[in-house]
Image (cartoon, one colour):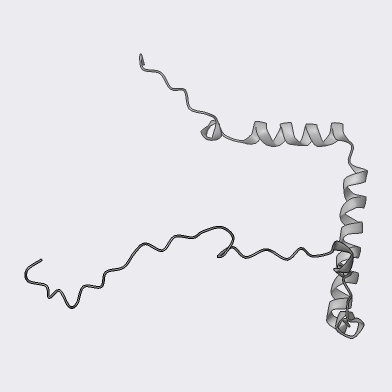
Length: 103
C-alpha cells in the first residue's frame, strides 16, 4: 500500500439497510377497477373478397363434393381388393430384406 497515496483512499463505514427505510410498498390494484373487456374495431374487421377468391372457394367446394361422391361409390371390400391387387403386382424389391448373419 506504500505505492498508493493515502490521499486517494476514501475511508468510510458500512451503510446497512435498517428497517423499512429502503423498502417500497407495492400498490395493490382493485380488481373491480380494471376493465378487461376487449373491443373490436368494426371498420378494420370488415374484409371483402375478390372475385377470384370467391370463384376459388366455389370451385374448391365443388371438387370436394366430387371426391366425396367417388369415395362413397366404392365399398370398403372393393378398396381392400384393389389394394391387395396392387400389392401383388409389386416386385419383391419393396419387401423388407432378410437379414441373417449365417448366410
